[in-house]
Length: 118
Image (cartoon, rainbow, N blue to C red; front, side, top):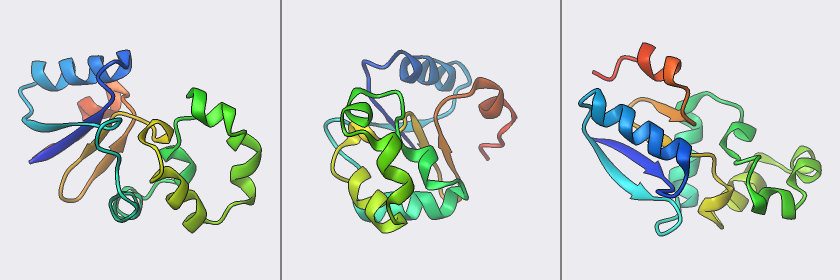
């Protein structure tokens, strides 16, 4: 089962959920604010995704800005960044769509349309 990790109040997450529903793609919904991803989960997702770790940060979020992460991240190790992400779901870019062998970060409709979910 695909995991759809989102913040229900986020309009991008709402659009992504509607897209999944419209395309009849089954998923298990998880609220990132109520059920923060663990360090182990984030490490696994980062590894599977092949993306730079910075792509997992919600750079437009208030918490990201208040912690001045724009200036701090370049000095941090991957381990430090993963541990920081695991402290608060609001630091994590969302939505996350996670399958057995893929991780999609954020919602770009064209990217999702071209992705093979089978």
